[in-house]
Length: 384
Image 1 (cartoon, helix red, strand yellow):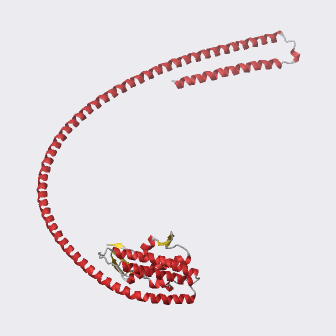
Image 2 (cartoon, rainbow, N blue to C red; image 1 turned 30 degrees about the vertical axis):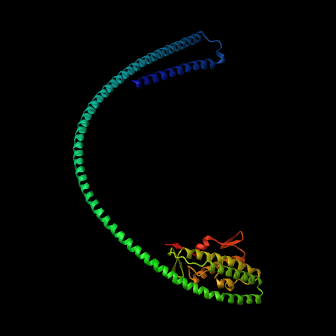
Image 3 (cartoon, one colour; image 1 turned 90 degrees about the vertical axis):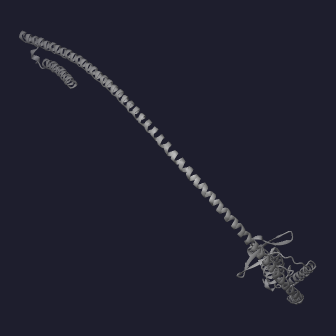
């Protein structure tokens, strides 16, 4: 319908355009004829005038006819347009009615689906309710069975626990008696070892004291010989240091003789040196720490003396290093052990004093002290 109306409208438009062009051609032709009449015909004859008037009337008639045709075409177009509008309105009303019918049908289908879904949901809910009741009944039966089973297992475990407690009590009693016997044996063994250690310490103490007294007699002779050598070398600072060292040794030995006593205590430390372990009690451990500290202090003084004498670096040439008895009273550790750690401290102190630096120790309030980490690195005492 729309395609037909569009074709008619195009046809009427083309026809109107064609009519306008024809009128233009007629008017142009009349003007052209009026301009090409020769000038000699300025006095037309009556017949010619009649022909011109006839042409003029025909022209006006054609023009009126064209105008009537245009009016008729326009009226026809207007009527066709109104008809098309009426048809479009009818089509729109029909489409609206169809849409309304479709909407009503969809609404009815939707209501029907909702009703079906509600019925299905009610059926599912009823089915789930029945299944839930059935599961609850099954669960209650299972719970009852499990409860009975747990009670039986609990009674069995209680019996087993009672039997196990009786066995454990008997076993603990046996272990207690066994530990008591072992403790008695260990105590007896410790007492035996303590008596053995005490006897060994007393024996070694007597040997240390004998060796200490023997070496004390040689110290003065060696010191005098060393003093003569230093005087010959004109090492006056080292000479004064040796005299001071010997005086400190003499005073220390007098003090130790005045308070000489020996107290037994079991070994509580061990340390590793030269591929083997050595053992010491608290007194022996303190004495070894003292050997390192005193050795470092005397080494600093000896190094400073050699530096002031402009003598070469040689800590082994010092009498204090060779003697290494300062602070030793003949108790708790062997004399070679004391000398070893005294010389280890002396060597490090001599290096700090000779070069005027504090690599291994420190100086504070007139006292030279060996650093704690250095002391622990040299003498790695371990409790056991």
